[in-house]
Amino acid sequence: MKKVLLSLTLAIALLTSCKEKTQDKVEEAAGAVKEEVKETADTTVHKVETAVDTAKSKVNKAVETGAAKVEETAKEVKENAKKK
Image 1 (tube, one colour):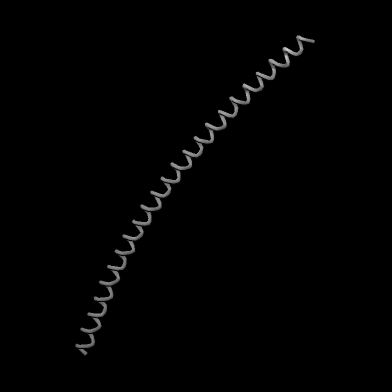
Image 2 (image 1 turned 90 degrees about the vertical axis):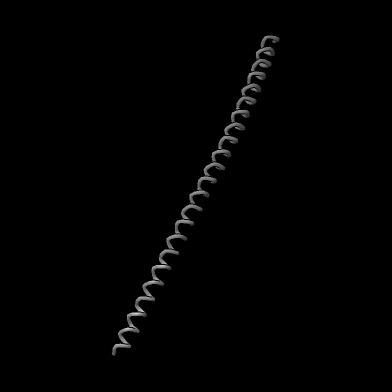
């Protein structure tokens, strides 16, 4: 009986020890995943901001070009109206 209780106690101690190691590994892995997700999110935010800035620049240039063409056409129309 003494051997059975001793064996049972040893088995419980081993299982508890393994459980703690597994839990530590899980916590480490969760921390690593959290850090990787944060880095990926930061990178994505940077890429999106860059894309938005580029698009904004292109739109502003297109607006300026369009405005210049409108002014040029308005001058031509005004000159043609004076000729008539």
